[in-house]
Structures are given as C-alpha cells and as structure tokens.
Image (cartoon, rainbow over all chains, first blue to last red; front, side):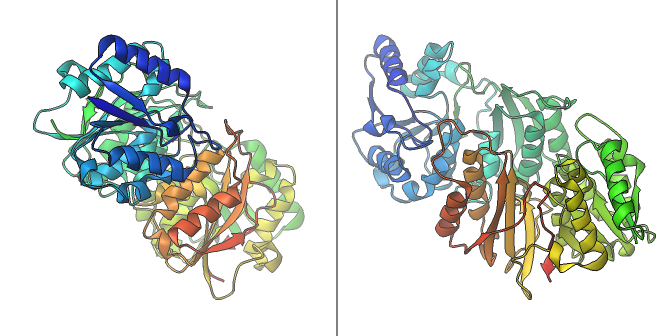
Length: 272
Length: 272
C-alpha cells in the first residue's frame, strides 16, 4: 500500500515526517509513505503558497500510484485551496482514501459534498509529535490497511451515516461551497483551544442552521486545552451542546471518543 | 428624550453607568438615560440569565415611554436571547431606535431582518471607559438627538443602504434565524482581538456565502488589538479582505471609520 502525504494547512516539519516513517517501518513494513516535497515548504502561516498546496494535493489525488492521501496536519489554510483543488480532481481520485481531521475538515467536507466515498476523520502525521503519538499513527495505519475495528470510534452505529469535524471548522464551512449535506447523519464534533464562550457561540451558529437541523443527532468529542474564561462560564462543553441541541430540536446522542489528542479514534464518513 | 439601556451580553458595571450619566448630564441635560436594573445583574459570563436579559430588552422595547434602546456593551451573550426576545416585540417597539455594535450585532441583525427601521451601529455606554470615551458617548448622543452629520461614518453614500457589523458576529449569524437580507447593501465590517489567521478564516466564511455575495460591496473598519500570529501571517487585514472580495466577486470599497475604539462612528442601518 502506498500513501501520499500533503500539507494543505500550516507548516509541517521534517522531524514529524521522520517519526512517522520510523513508526510505520517498525509496524507496517508493507506500507510505503511518501511525503510530497510540498510538505516542507513554508510561506507565511502555511506549508507553501496556496497554489503549491493545491497542486500537491491534486498531484497525489490524481495519481493512480497512490492508494491513499493523508493530510500531514491541521492548523489553518485548507479553506484557501480546497474549492479550487477539488474541482481539478479526475476519476482516479475518487477511488482513493482521504484521511485527516481538524483543518483538513474543509477538504473532507468538500470531497464528501462531491460524492467521494472513502473519507475518514482520523490521526495525522503531526500527531506523531504528541505524547502517545506512536499509538495514534499506528491506529491510523491499522484502520487504513486492515480496516481494524479497534481503531474505530466505539459508538459508531452500523447502517447509520456519520461525519466528524472540528466544531469551529464545521461552523465556518456552513454556507460555503464546501458544505456537505449531512441530512440523516450522526455528526461528531470536537474542539481544541477555544474559550467556553466561543464553544457556546459556535454551537449557536451550528444548531441555528436549517441544514444542520436535519442531522440525526450530535455527539460531542473532547474539547481540549480550553483557555480560562473570564469570568467563569459556569457550564462545561457538554452542558453547552445539550443546551443548543435541545433548543434546536437536534437529538443529543452523548459523548464521542475523538479529539485533538493521541486517543483520537477513526470515524469513516458515510455508513460503515 | 428618554433612552433605556439594557445589557444583552456580558456583565456591565455601575462605574460605566455613572460615567455615562455624568457625560450626558453635562452635554445633554434634555436627555434622560435610564439603566434598567438588569444591566447590573451577573450570571456566569453574562449580565444576568438569558431570560432576564430577554425580559429587560422586551420591557424597554415595548414601553412607549422610551424613545430609544441603547445596548450597554458587547462581549458575548446576545445570540442566546435575541430570537426569543425579538419574537415578543409589539408595534410600539418598531418606532424605537436601537443602538449598539459588537455583540449587540446579533440583535441589530435580527431586528433588521424583522423590518425594524431605526437601527444604528454606534458607541455604547461601555465605551465611556475607554481613553477618549467621553467623545464616543457624546457622538452617540449627538446623532441620536440631533442626527448630527459629524457623528456619521464619513463614507456613507446617500441613497445607498448600509449595515455595519463585527466580522466574527456577522459570520456567525449567517444561516441562523437572525440573518438579515443585505442584498444591495454596502457592508461595513470591523474586528477586535482576533488573530490574522482568524480574520482570514472569517472572510472565507463570509465571502463564501451566496447571500453575502449579493451585497453592493464591503468596506473594512479597523481591526484592533490583533494578537501576534505565530508564524507571522505575512498579510495585513486590508490585504486579506481584498483577497477574499476579489475571489468571491464582491466589490472592495475601501476602509471605514468604525472599530472597537472611541473613534467608532455611527452607521445607521438601511438608507440615510
């Protein structure tokens, strides 16, 4: 199996790539991981200019020599190249598996909208830099190579369609050309580094949207590294999501085992 | 003239109220400013619970004894009570002038959508606490009492419809029951305390929206207190807004004299 890695968002490092190569070589010698040279470009906030990030994505996606395209990391930037890049994909690209989360959600969303069948929210090469990152990378490969059930988010319901996103990313792609139709889907959301009041505000935006109100329900992943709210917000993230779900008539379906951490589980888009 | 003040968002202080009373008494003895007791409630992040903030707003808005309703300050919280509160307004409320900006934008948006004719983006009582805050409060009153032209944002075009919002607030009300139809309007946007990459991301969201693409153009106010971007974003707020306007086919109409500061000018909603 051959996996191509591109970096559509923030700058990526040779160090993280080396870690991923080491982890994969030890546990998955049958897998070849190719980091596109674009991964190591830098341009301001990003892993290279918009055009370079789009071009690398299109190149790997359209190349029949790769089985999967793995997004190197999140941060910010995929929304600047996603629409253009997706419009340039060929039929070969449709057979490939696309893997990532966080800022890569803009691309997963746009690909899902375009009917691409093989997408999954799951750990990325950058996660190799976390404590416990080895397990995260192994889990990502276990699912990709063997479709290992143990790698999956444990609450996924067979026969039901799912999608998973970072809360802020999902909120900000609503109403744009990247918004997918999630009618009837179970929507899993996670967040990182946002104040409680911003989590509350994001949920106002998300559950206030008519299209989102057609989901089968929402499950909440972890909200990590929440900065201190001044004054204290007085409610935690679960109370917030329950509040907005109740108000919008969206079913609250409990917690989910996803988040910006090394325990982040795999959520394939669509039905299992 | 009698102005009622309510606080639909963050906690407000007696100190700010006292300053506003002093400024108004000196320059505008004919104006009576009544701070609703709700202004001084506290509940977690907010100036009292959602129900209390909604109730105070409805009480002042529906009371024929008040000529105007002034939002005490921004922060966060108006989106939690706006839809419910606006649905409870009576015909008297429609004749009143509503004044504020920042987080109060959720209410201004919902009121504009509901066809309320007298709305303006302009300084709030909390601005009295800024350096130069006296001038801000006086400007707000000059416009309200005398419709003083000097208080107006200088680039407003007679005969054209305008609306002004905080960028984040505007982005997050899109697609919700508070979204107004701004077709043909000149849209003025300002921002405060957001990283450059978040300004970029907000503009992706705003200009990616089909309804927003029907505006006559966008003008950019000040983006104040921008936290350091790591790494440097490499573009300033004007370059960012020009970039997204060009990409979306939205007319860039230059800078605007609004912002989270004491120089913030008045922008009446609709046509002058």
